Image (cartoon, rainbow, N blue to C red; front, side):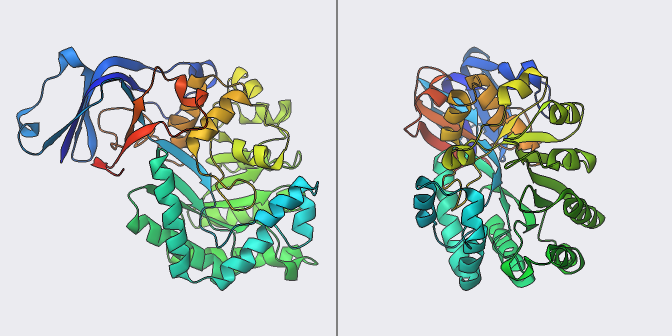
Length: 417
């Protein structure tokens, strides 16, 4: 089916020449077309422009052309969410109460909560149960405007369960219209049985898990939680080198709890992204400048855990790009609502609406290795777009933080919601 969207109040995030990302002051600018049309054909963006310039090729005319009148509405590229843990079994609201009572993330983890709690529940769940639960979450995020997600393993923490998680993600790729990337995160936490000898667990990841993940082609990327109380820089580098040997590009959890050296390790091994970044100083910014690594902040996690905020304003003003992600997971960010993440980026991190939209679209696509296909309105890119309700401006997207402002979602050129 071909789709023609007409009378668009404002077509947002258009590109006439492709970009992989936007950095620094460029993040404050977004190209738009007012009173616009958008033509979708064969799942791709075929044309766009002002209504007065609309001309339909013969092959798009006739019965196969569905026309949508978007009067008073904006059209944007769907959000990309480059950091989630949305395959899990069961919520962790009791730990939420512990947080309210003052227990820290690390204290909860030491008591067997946190990631280890999710690992226990995942071990007891079947693949069928995990697929069903994750599909519900994917349907929810589609309705909120997300068109692509990265999903990590990491609630397995043993070979069998890590492979189970990754097989579930593979099934989600088959069943869902979303574009999905899979990341192997066996190094999410040290299992209880290895607490006295974490290096033995690192050896298990390197010698057993990674070869099996690679042999079944279950992951696109490899990740490590490089932070205080989790995995050291030495552990991280060993795991990343082993993953790279098998063709898995790194993405790193870094500097959420301290100045851990995770950002430097990520840049050293050409990580696609380094994520969290609550503890980022001048040295880390200097290392990131000129690298190919996307700094990715997770506003939902910092908000939920009441943690220090990553210095996004300073990073942008220093010339860096920024991506944002939901960190959708049961323990520290139980929401995949990227509209809410836009609002948090603006309200908490002092990012302008334009900067926040760039961070959730083209830069987030880069953090997934997808900015040549997604993240903007450009001829030849995959037609992942959404049509808003009638709203006054792009500023309204982060401003109206409590409501779903999306009316229609199109994924791969088909109406998904």
